[in-house]
Amino acid sequence: SPHPVVLLGVNTGRIGFLTELSPAAALDQIEAIAGGAGRVETRAMVETDLLRRGEELHEHFHALNDVVVGRAAIGRTVQFVVRADDTAIGNYRADGVIVATATGSTAYSLSVGGPILHPESREIIVTPVAPHLSPANSIVLPEGARVEVEIAAGQKAILSVDGQPDSQLEAGDVVRVRTSPHVARFLRLGPPGEFYVRVGRRLNWLNE
Image (cartoon, rainbow, N blue to C red; front, side, top):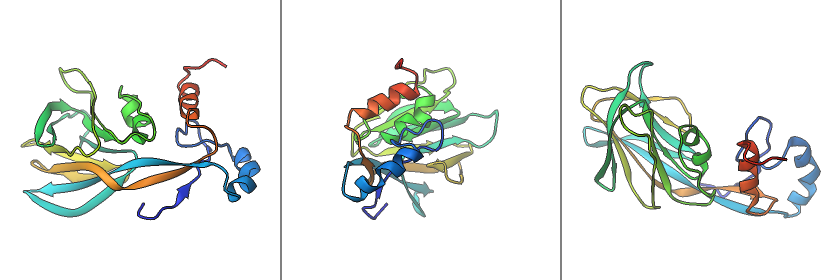
């Protein structure tokens, strides 16, 4: 992520919101791409720190999709407080909480009812996962907001950054998330509005 490498997404799976081309189309376009065709779409990332007993640990991550604080065991919820810029915005007992970028808005956050953001938006989405006895509403925070998720006393949880191996969290741990100085760059051959077409097709909103 510190390097300005441009990525071309090729869809070899089923959904692929980040991808624009099939393998065959990518091969057909390779000469045009090498010749400079297309435009660069810049996507925001988030960076994450973990604080334990008030001290920042060495774990420092950058994510393109999302940061998830979730339950440590099946069948057990976790209690946590979510703050935005030192103001409490939620005190949940839930399966977890997702802090997502615009890119992550079409990933895990979408599956639990979160909103879809334009791919080049720089806002941050906070979405609780199956909160107990409270509505599962998302909140969209502006670029520059600092989100903190604090694990309540007597609780255990896990931290997952872009789906990478989970880190164990202890009671009192604070996961801090904010906009990263790094961005992800994707090569796009279609117009900006093609994003909405891809979303509509893959979510079955459009009839063809």
